[in-house]
Image (cartoon, rainbow, N blue to C red; front, side, top):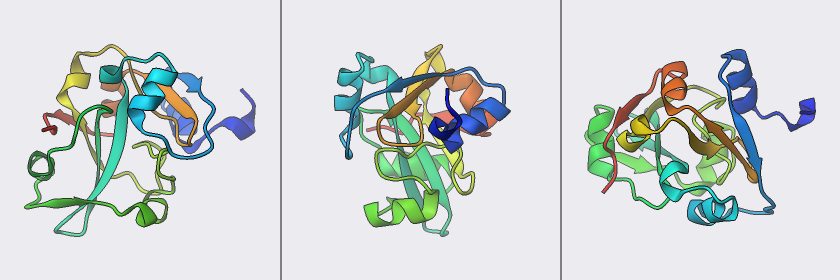
Length: 158
């Protein structure tokens, strides 16, 4: 793969010696995760979206969950030890993470935030997450990802 095609996420995975595959799709702007999964023939329950939230304390957190499911804000807050969390406004995503909406991934951000991955991923040998830009998905081991970013698995969906 040419150097200019690598994202921060891919560089992090390379440096961490984590195996991954790249799935690329045509897309000029944000489309939802279910559409991406269908476009790439990926099972929606194995295709995860990254949501970034801010807690009452001011700290930021990443939550990964299957694209067809919704984040339970109470469970999410509890999983990170906050009274409550609010999703970042779209206009703030790039400023906080370094990524754009639709290309946000928990790896290779400006700063590594505490990350909680929905517990269903723990049973999967591989899953799909954003590759760090719109039009790119990465397939990798959820166990290896959580270990590399010091995240955790918990039930965070409605």
